[in-house]
Structures are given as structure tokens and as C-alpha cells.
Image 1 (tube, one colour):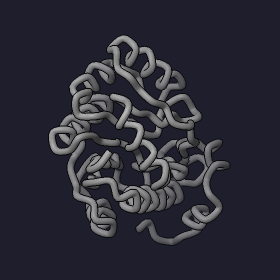
Image 2: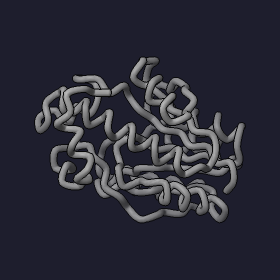
Image 3: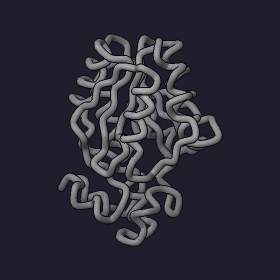
Image 4: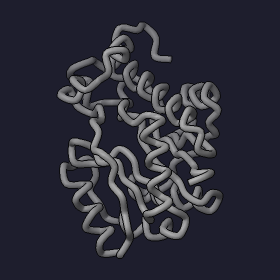
Length: 213
């Protein structure tokens, strides 16, 4: 799909705020350094996919996010909504008023590279919705075509997040909404100490850096 918007959701990579579930393994500063490295990697891959407008959706306005966006040619917006589902739905709907489709991803899945993003955009030529499931039962990416954007509010409403059956509930909801969806191969995201085994070797250098960004 041409002109597919890419939306990256992220928190500022600050100690005690970012990647808090990794603090027992990495410490607060180490978790923040990894969050910064993952954000840089995600924006680099999203920019390299060259699909359309690139947006960095922050949980707040922060200089670290502003500098990361500037390095990769991303424009910035704030996440808005009462919970994660509402924030994702609003972001997708807004972008689908500006483009034929949109892909939304977090900054915690290093395997979600430019080639995978292009495959997800291509899937939207045949489907209303595309997902990249995560190995932990959630998802690393969700995208939709403009005609399906309004349905995302219903799909995401009243959902529990960061639990093992998120993707299964998405499948059930998509079926109930009679939407045609495609799932790409499941990938590992980096949320817990156990997930660090899936961290690319090159990114492990981030854990030894002295500066967050």
C-alpha cells in the first residue's frame, strides 16, 4: 500500500519510567539505556521502510523524544485517550483520515525491521487489518486500512493489556466485527528479564553505555 503512515508509540527513555519490568535485571538506568536503544532502532527501521509519513507518538512532550524524532525525520504527536486501547484507536483513526492506511507499533520489538514493515503494508492491500503477533501472546504491530479505522475503537474497547491472551481476544473481536485480517509471523518483544535472551547481540552494547541518549 502506498503512503501507509507509520506510528511509533513510546515513552521518554528515562530511568524509572521506561522498561520498568526490566529494572530487576538491568537496574533503572540500564533499562532506560535499553529503551533508548530500542527507540532508535525502531525509528531507524520505520524510516528505512519508506512507506509514508512517520509519526512518533509520545506519552508526553520530552526533549529526548524530540531529538529522537528529529534524527529520523519523524513528526511528533501526543498519545490521547483514557487507556492504551483508546490511544491506539485514536491514533489509527487520525492517520487514516490522512492516508489510505496506517501501521502502529511500539518500540520494544527489535525483530520488527523495515522489511517486516513493508510486508505489513503490503498485507493491507488484501485485508482490513494486519497484526504482527508477539510470542508472549500480545502483538508487536497492528495496522488497518482507512475503511476499518472506526472499528478499531470497538476492537480495543474494554480490553486488558499486557496479559497472555491479548492476541487471542483480538482474533475473537475481529471475527465478531466481520473484519478480514492477516497475521504475519510472531516475533519476540523485549518486556521482561526473560525476553533479554532475544535481544540482538549488537544491541547489548546499549546496556554498557554511560548515556541514555
